[in-house]
Amino acid sequence: MGSTRKRKRRRRRSWRAGAGLRRTIAIVAALLLAAFAFVIECHGGQGGIPTWSELYTTLGVPTDGPDAQLLADSRTTVSVLDVGQGDAVLIGQDGQYCLVDTGTSESQDALVRSLRQANVTELDYLILTHPHADHTGGALAILENLQVEELLLPVWITEDGTDPWPRGLLEQAAADGTIVTEVEEGERYALGSGTVNILQGGSAWMENADDANNGSLCLLFEAGTFRYLATGDAEEASEQALVDRYGTGLASVLYKAGHHGSSTSSGETLLSVVRPQAAAISCGVDNEYGHPNAAALRRLTDIGAEIYRTDTMGTVTFTYENGVLSAVTSREELDAAA
Image 1: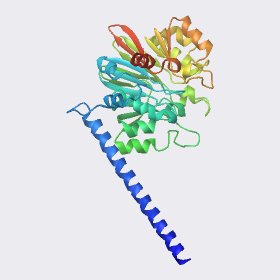
Image 2: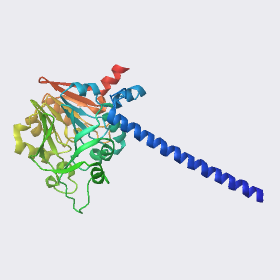
Image 3: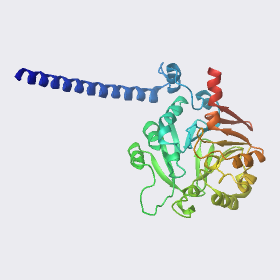
Image 4: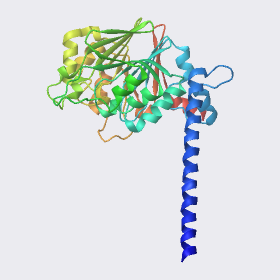
């Protein structure tokens, strides 16, 4: 009996020693990975140290985001990132970047990887249009993995006074030294030689607590003759308010269809003044909402817009050079690589 107990005690001690060793190895590995990431962030592309894009290419990681060379070679870019049933759009101007929305929490790792593949490690602005999880799910991961100069949020007052944004978001921004700004209508933010214009948005535009879509920030990005309009998840009431206030001043080369191509957005009144050359729709494959809606697609087609969809094309990167709008999709890049 005594010898059996001793053997059990020896096994317990051996197990505890093994668990301690595994914990030590895990901590050391985490520290080494953190140091490796830091070196790539700070010195990638110098002295033989690879960039994130080169590293992912070497490791054979599929390219599901914007092409790094395309962004580097183009002054004006808008990349509608494939984040499934959600929204995330990267605006680039003269090598400076603004990310509008961050998709879902399920797509956050892919979002960070896509930006790193494109050698985008710094953002001048991170903009969240409204506090729905399919637009804010990856926000914390973006702050944790990229250098963000300023976080722009609509003024959002909840009925119970609670913070509507993802838990820990504002604390992480403070820890990173990211400026947090509640934006007002009519404000303009410089991005390279371009400008992000805040048209409207915030909880003041909501009729009730369930009307968050109509509180979406509506943005117009301008760079020379290029104009890109994005309305978040805004529906008919907010679209009508935009038209009443700005009219044909909303005319744009590129338009991101509101609310993932929902039937309640991209109405005839708005489209009659926007009249875009191209429209991008961010939605998930075979999503449960049936986005994009057939009626919305028909309205976009009727005004002559060329339609691009992330569910069928993956990430879509638009470039604008010498008055010409072009588009490249990540599915095309994957097919070419194959």
